[in-house]
Image (tube, rainbow, N blue to C red; front, side):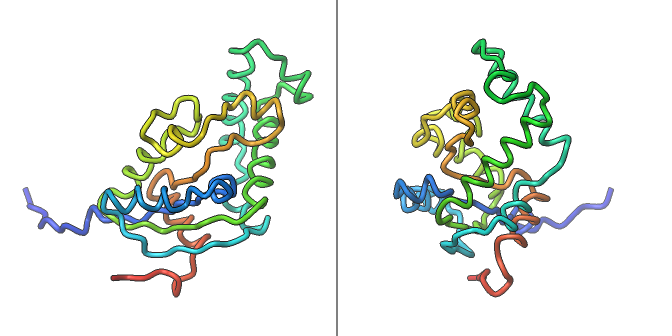
Length: 193
C-alpha cells in the first residue's frame, strides 16, 4: 500500500460567517469575533455591507427539495403545538411554506448591515458550526452563539411570518463554503498572512 505524505495544510479550511442584521443591531459582532479568534481561527476577510436582494437570492437558494424540507420542519412545529398552518399561512403545502420562509429570510438579511467574515483554520467549517449552535434556536445549547444570544422559536417566527432570529449564519460544508466564499468576497478582499 502506498503511503500518503502527511501535510498539515490538508486540514486547513475557510468558511463563511455572516453576522446577520439582528446580531449587528444588538452589538454582538465583537463578542462573536472574539470567540472565533480564541479558538485559533484566523480572519482572512471581513466587511460590513448592506446586502442587495440579488445576492441574498443566491445565498438562499430556490431549490425545491431544500425548501420542501424547510416547510416540513415548520409543519412539524405546527403539529407539535396544535396550530393549523392553513389558518395562519393559508396553506399546508410544505414547498409553499418553504418558499415563504425563504422570502422572510431574504427580507431579514436585507433589513440592515451584515458583517461578512471569511475564517481560516484547521477544520474551520466543523468548528464554526459547533460554535454557532443549532439553527433551531430552541435546540442550541448554552455556550454556543445561538444558545447564548438567541431566545427565539421557529413556530413563533412562522406564526409571525418572519424568520427565526438566529444572529448568525455559517457555511454547512466544504461545497457550501466554497460557493459562499465566491458569493460574498472578491479575490482582492481575501488576505494571506
